[in-house]
Amino acid sequence: MSKLSIKHVIVHELIKEAQKDFDHSNRYNLRDTELDKSNAIVQKLVDGVVDLYGSRGNLAHHGVFKSDPTLCGPVPDLFNTYRSVTPSNTVDFINISKQIMMQMYKEAKNQTWSSGGYVVFTDYESQGLRYLLVTMIKKKNGVTISENLNPEEMIHLELNYINQAARINFQKYHEYSVADDIKKTEISYLSFISKTNGQSASAYFIAALGCDKGIASAGATRKLPTEIKKFFKKHPELAPHAEEFKNKIIKYLEKQYESKISASLSDVEAKAFEQLSFLNDDEKRDNLLGKMMQHLNSEGVGIPSDFVVNKGSLDKLRKVIYKNPSYSFNFDKELLGDNADAKIYYNDATGNLIFNNLPEEAKTKIRSALKEKKPVKGEKKSE
Image (cartoon, rainbow, N blue to C red):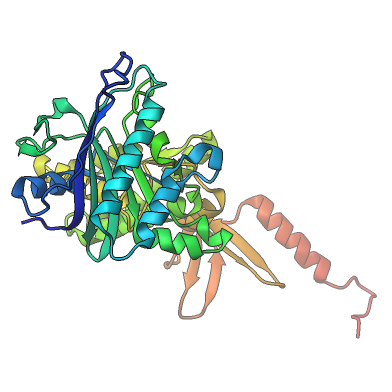
């Protein structure tokens, strides 16, 4: 039995070989009826695709639909209409799936390198949240689907890699639709996976759905070190390394920002692999890495596969910043400690902040300021 609540599911086929033009008289094979969601093979198909989504090797970008009406195509409006009808019905589901297939054909026909495959459309619920998932499965992946588009076998859901997929979160879409402009920059209701090569062979899939990468780089920058620390703390064998690895990731973000290069989860995975070298059990290490990547890229956390490092969020991660009308301070967190040997020592009992081993330049400025405060001989203090 499926661990998901499947509302609707259907499979269509886009018929095209790479580096060949469409046979425009036979561009796709479209089903007119939904698949039987109670069928064990159908359930296995849906479970397998959902499990793969956002896993290692299938990390998703997070974003929204394109806002430019000349670039987004019809899918954003089609989805908005579809989600507005409650309860959902078979006719509307089949209609939106066919409309998306037609849009895929329009986008793919102009790209020689594009290839077709089976496209699985699923409207489902998981942990109380509703999603629409559209996934392209290539024939080479070991999926056996009959001519009338019934999944006959799902032998190897070692598909391992999803070629293209997009998933829309109904709840987050609603939150975005009622949010103000500032709040919208922090909400991503759509995520997508696209394996592309130099010829952008799969770009048509993302273009057809009108997907656009989100701009919530501030949130991604802020969350990455924090969520990594949380994950490490949850696992006893990793907990002692949580703070150390969090600081390594902050240093990595600094480096990417200074080099003007986007941060990526693939880089984070490589650094985590190195950090976990103390684990002798390779299988356990791989399992923990997989879980960590899935956590970071999940809908709830929402860190995309790559993002531009945000300076404001980075400063808050690495610095202690305070300002009031009388004084201010701004220093790296790694200098702070709760023992007297720390470069910057905070005594919680007294509430005092002490700067140890100040450089000569700083001491000179302080002495000069103190000297200015002392009255010159012969002058009276002002009343």
